[in-house]
Image 1 (cartoon, rainbow, N blue to C red):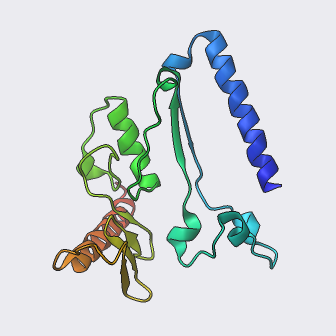
Image 2: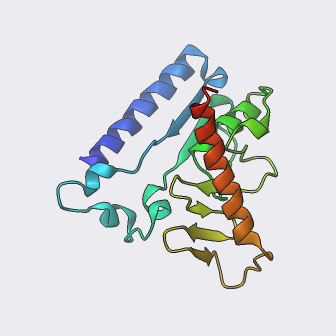
Length: 180
């Protein structure tokens, strides 16, 4: 059923793009596709099919919750795809789209980053786990795992990123607590 739903989405998107092209407005249209969660229906009812879908057993929430973001515009159809391979999250969508559309915004007021900027990649969750270009930190075990054995981790890096994540989570909660 999961694969059939994805095939149906593929057919729907093909129809939508063709309709936009036939109407002559594909070059003025941007389509953004992203999932807002992992396929949790595949791990319900006592049987976990996620390892079968992923090809591995997820060891943490980052491995379980990963997905793709696709941004499409007809004017880019003949260009090579732009692949972003640094850690990103859904928090990065708004600043990235704001940049692509030329919208003025204060990046300090957004918890995410424009993925095309020079800002360092930082993905985190409400459990205070985080992931950067240097590695992944899991707060429940207080464990940092570098992306490779060859990478040089700057002095104090883990503590610095832990503080940044803690501050961002507290800031986001405070925004709601004080009614913006």
